[in-house]
Length: 146
Image 1 (tube, rainbow, N blue to C red):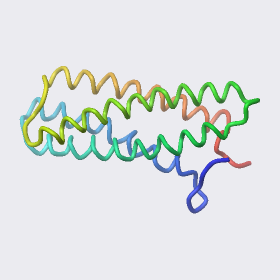
Image 2 (cartoon, one colour):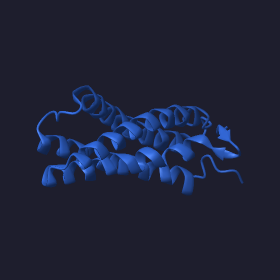
Image 3 (cartoon, rainbow, N blue to C red):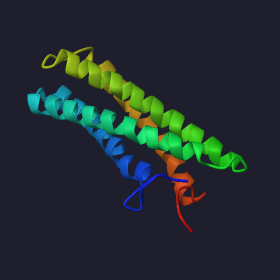
Image 4 (cartoon, rainbow, N blue to C red):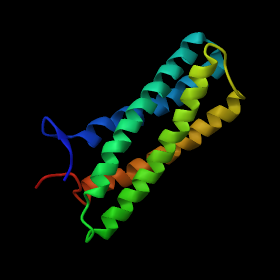
């Protein structure tokens, strides 16, 4: 059974925030690297922090949804595990980056090219995880009422 708020699945309500904010953090980090404007660094900090906070809440409700998938639906459970593992790893990495940003604020931390590369790889991992999550809903109808 999917946990709902006002009739809508909570996990599906929340996943859009980190799915949008983590790539926005990457874009703002690239813009900050090229233009050296504090505005982009601040926007990056807001995006990564908001994405990390909403990501952990979405992970919690996604785990509850995963545990609710019946055992006889082994393929769906596997896809849910892959989805959760990829996206959970992405949330973990971005949480570490958010912590470093907040801890070192207002100074930059680390090598900017390395940080951008880490963010780019992690955003790609997030997109692959989102593919698995989208298939759970669209193809296998997990979390969708008939």
